[in-house]
Length: 452
Image (cartoon, rainbow, N blue to C red; front, side, top):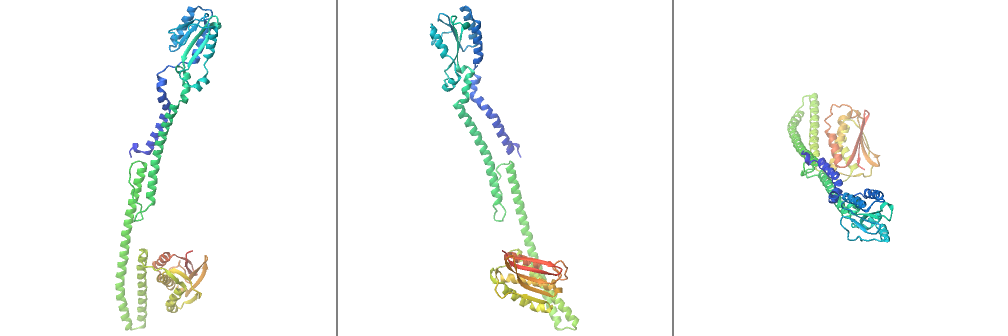
């Protein structure tokens, strides 16, 4: 991934931009004011002015004029003049038009009072034409005169006080800050938008139950995440395709095996039937009967195998209707009764006369009972007992099928691959029924009921 396209790099550029930009805003805005002017320090000027006024005590006019000229040379932007004891204005350099040539004592006192600079007044008026004026008595003696220095406020650092309340600067600063916030918001909004789009793509599934791929627009961290998501989708699709092929192959294999097994079973049945018609001894009749029984077992196993294949593929027809379950149980028991008597089972049937209505497929439910009773006759035959009753469990009526065999943990010579119980499990799930097995060495109880 290109480092320039990285979100981390772009975020660091954004922060660096902010750290550099904000300190530069005042400097950029005020650069014409700060770099093109030499600002005087009023405190420094006032100290020099007071010191010179004290040192000029008793000096002649020519000396005073010379000393003030040196101050004028140091501060060329300042206007310097003095008023002698006779009230005459003595200018250092060009004469100012608004300064009178002759003064009375009262005029000079009024001028000194009015020329005092007040910072609070300057901040309230904000008049850039204000003049900073310093007046001092020469030698602290009114008879010697008054020396005056005037500098425009904009040429002193007192003018910088107004910079902090400069309205154009406030607008400029807010504009730059707003632009930065807008850029930052757009940066994170774009990240959030892409993440939400990816989340939506993950939560919405397509026709095959798998989310669709997303379009990669940028090869940054989120782009790499989108690429990994697309790769995962491709792997899921390939896995789903392989699973379908394997499932179809398995179903086809089971169907072929079932068909291939039925053909020799039919031939074997015919030969057994022919041999039983002309038996030569009782031992042969018994052997043929055993072979016939095994053929019946194999036929049932093949039927179960086909049923399981259809159920797992969702192609076994189902017709859910309100059905009297106890009536169906009685019908199944009646069909199995001769076999119970043949194996000399103790039959304990305790079913109430009232109806018990469940919404089931009657054919499926009969198949469930046949599989469970067949398990009893094959694997719990040693107990010589079968009981079918109704019990109350979890607030509902359950049907329980009991035997007194050795339990599921014991091996049986007739034990198969467990397809019968797998069929029961699938059928119970499809009909929204609940079932539970309780088994031990003293017997097994299987409970059938409606889910609450």
